[in-house]
Image (cartoon, rainbow, N blue to C red; front, side, top):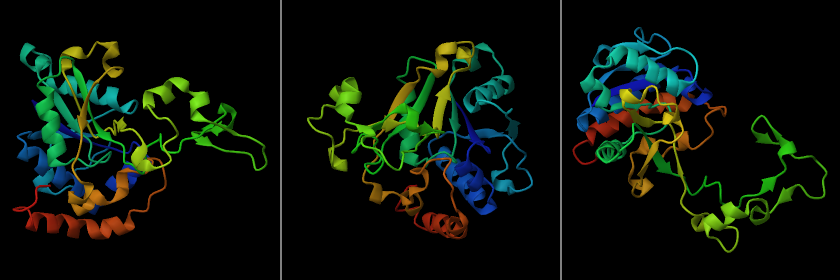
Length: 271
């Protein structure tokens, strides 16, 4: 099993994170350390730009250039070109970690790697449970498509009725939720899972399978009490939209201290 780490200027949030040296270095140090703990030694970095000048030697892995375009496809194409396609390599899993897309904990990565043993296909992703504060089925309302502009619903200032009940707009989804009434409380919403793009794996033999990207095996990760996570993971950094404006100046100052405190407590707390 091969492991790689991917970083790049793909969306506003990741661009802000990796453009700050303190954050980039600490993110990479954490994910490399976590990968080694679960016996996944990273073989290199998948990058859109050259990061050699900003990375210290202890995390300076070989860099593999990824061309612009659809991130997933371009990463897989770059890896196949680099790894090669002999019989042994085409059957082994290649795991890609994206620390700029979501928190990658030791437990999450370990659970994902263990579950890969039971995956029959050639493409798998790690999905995490929606936060109860971000569950889209909580108090959901439906607006007409004509009010949708660039991914944002913009309602007129004066209108008699612009929303429709979910039960009327999407009865099949309503039935699937199994709710007698709209979940007015966050704890009443059904569990939903999302692929945050932080961990995926594929087998090179599937490079010509066009359905590869449409039906991945979804490996769920049900974390324990979020309050038991490291402090840096309790920050709702990856709960906001990836293209929303983000000021990381405070995070840039406190991140080295957070990771330092984690190392000091490593004997009692696994990150």
